[in-house]
Length: 166
Image 1 (cartoon, rainbow, N blue to C red):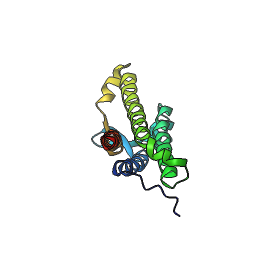
Image 2 (image 1 turned 90 degrees about the vertical axis):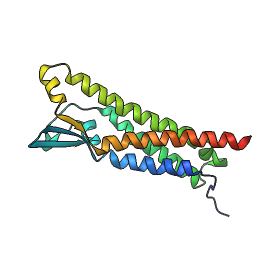
Image 3 (image 1 turned 120 degrees about the vertical axis):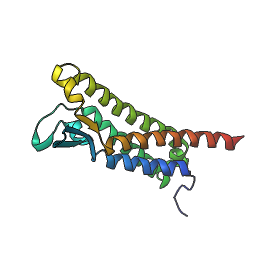
Image 4 (image 1 turned 180 degrees about the vertical axis):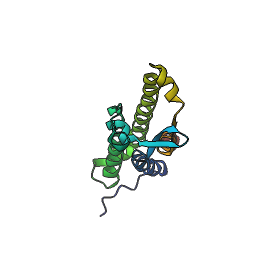
């Protein structure tokens, strides 16, 4: 007899794919700093550890490590549940809530870093000028988009489950 839990929904599978996508995006370029002829890019990981280009130390946001932690945790729980290692389909039952919480935590952390970076730049005159030299790239935007879609998938999954009961 197979131990695989076949109660996974389309929304949960989409959520798992999006979580893996956000994990990959964490290591892709998030911000670009520079002027027209001299640009440098930093990934979410580099922003978290404060390791800038060419080993130059920049301000770090260790809270960004919650992005891969929450997405990895969600993936592990869902995969354990789908493989049948958790009893009575618990992971399948709680999957929408796990999906929503992990995605909301990730969104909160990303927006916290964005606001904190802007506020720290506003403290000095040169920081205000530097704000115009910072642009956000694919890894940052795609992480936000994927987390937003994951929240929608989790809410849709909850709605569809409640509609099936009645």
